[in-house]
Length: 213
Image 1 (tube, one colour):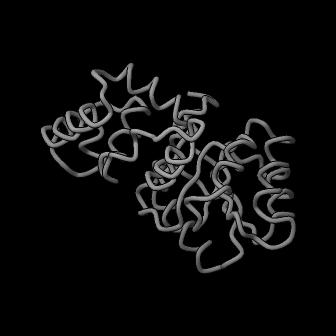
Image 2 (image 1 turned 90 degrees about the horizontal axis):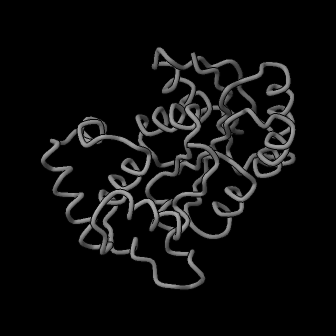
C-alpha cells in the first residue's frame, strides 16, 4: 500500500485529488494539509511514501515545503502540482530534488500513474512540463523534442519509464500498432534509431534528471 499525503490550500481541489487516488486499491490517503507548515508536521507524524504538493500554498509555500521535506525526509517521494508548466518554477523545483511534476490539468489516471512511478523510484513529468523543459534546456540549442506532438511526447515519456509497447497502448487506450506508428514518427523526428539513443537524447535535453530509476 502506497501511503500518500495531499497538500493544497483549496479544499475542493484537495478532496478531488484524495477521491481520485482513494479509488485505487494500491493507494491509501493518510493525511491532508492546506499549508506548507501543516504538511511538514504531517510528514513527520505519518511517514508517507509520497506527498503531492500544490506549489502555490500559503505560509512558507509549496516550493519551500518541498525543499524542507527533501532535506529532512529524503526517503519521501515528492510530486509538485501546479498550473505552471513553463517558466522557471518547474526547473527550480526539479533542482531541489522533487520526484515528479504534474500540471493541475492532468487527467485523473495520470495522477495515479505518477504516484506509482515515483513510489518505484522513477521520475515522472507530465508531457506538457517535459516539453517546456526540453525547450528551455541544452544551453540554448534548439531542442529536437519541440518537433513532437503532445501524444508523441506522452509515448516518449512512457518509453523512457521502461514501459513496453503493450503497456503504453493500455495506458493510452490505443492499439499496440498505433504505438508502433508513434514510435516510428518519434524516432524519425528525433533522428534516432532505438531506445538507447532516445535515452541519451532525453538526458541531454533535461527529460531525465536521474534521481532514481
